Length: 334
Image 1 (cartoon, rainbow, N blue to C red):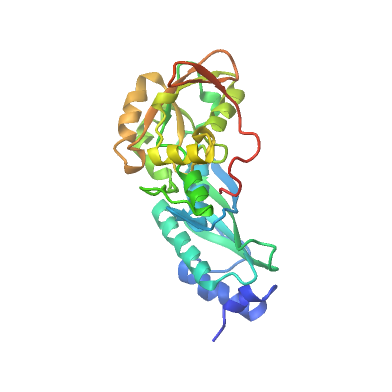
Image 2 (cartoon, one colour):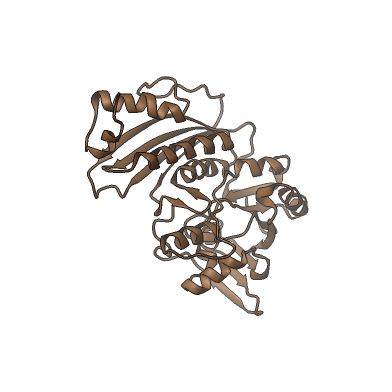
């Protein structure tokens, strides 16, 4: 009987112990049939999307999610934002000595369930153990592959003046859920992370793909930073209305207590869409039919000038210029 605890109690464990861990423990959660040096994938001819990401969130478990589901959904969402259909994910675990086996099993189970929900396969990966104090529990690295069923790539160069900006849900939920858990704060009702797969939401509006010009999920740096990136990439002006941006009351209250701006707080389950004005109401209506999009809102419009600017029409009648987040408002958030 192999004591799998040894893998995370003794730095550098390998040989039979690691082999048994990979074959027995990981296979119990992930449908990896063969442990080759590389996965062999059947991918349709044509363009594919490829992404990679690393997840170092602290704490590992937070209201509404954990590092496992975050890793899967974060990778899936990056593939979705360019218009591809997520298919395959690689998973690499960097585990610190002494990491509790029950927590590892909990994370692996979360990865399994998230993969099923998103409709993707974990096909390959790696496991490393580092010395105590060198890994902060567990880090996860992923890579993802998506395929294009037809030509529906969403890229910033398709954005044009007159496009309507749609936000698929309320902002600040993930960042504030992690911050509250990290600092032992509680709110009623509780602030829950919006960690979820956006490919399922996008399926609702795929028939309007010709009218959807660009997508992006406003993760680190929040909504304001994402919009500023678009403005700089296109040299167009983005104008949004503060009163139309959905923010849950408990998130707004938490931000006020902590002195944070919700426009710069990380999200993990919403996207910003740039859509033809003529079809914007149809896209919005369809998004609202899905549980993930019921809070979707039209928040602004693209203008020709002043180029590279993001302008916020405030609830008090003024105008505020938004820039990128400088530094990390919330460290270790994803």
